[in-house]
Length: 123
Image 1 (cartoon, rainbow, N blue to C red):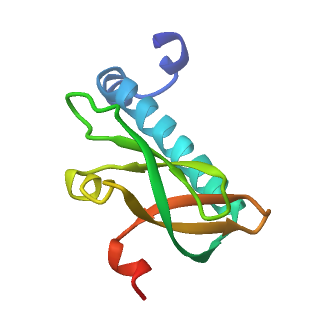
Image 2 (cartoon, rainbow, N blue to C red; image 1 turned 180 degrees about the horizontal axis):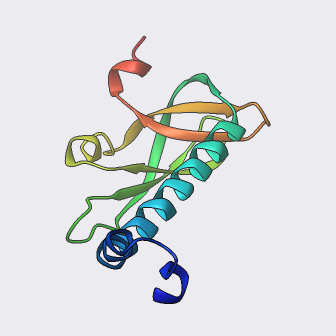
């Protein structure tokens, strides 16, 4: 580090030696954050394709000490299978025999499904 900072004032050299690693980490996180935002913006918005009742075929817990995560395999009204996830115990209670599933469509045509509150399907 001293090879790169030998032309700088001594107080700047000391600052960079004490805080240089933290500055590099902060700059790296900022660049990664900006890249993530650009990637998210390139996906485009999604639109709701509607809410459906889906039959729950199986559930399996993939939780660990830090995160609660339950995944369920459901059969959609079209006959296709999809995997949805519940990230709280409150949502996991909705995965008994049928679940309310929201179909979402991206602008590129990709469809994905999310667990929705049971009241959404009642409408």
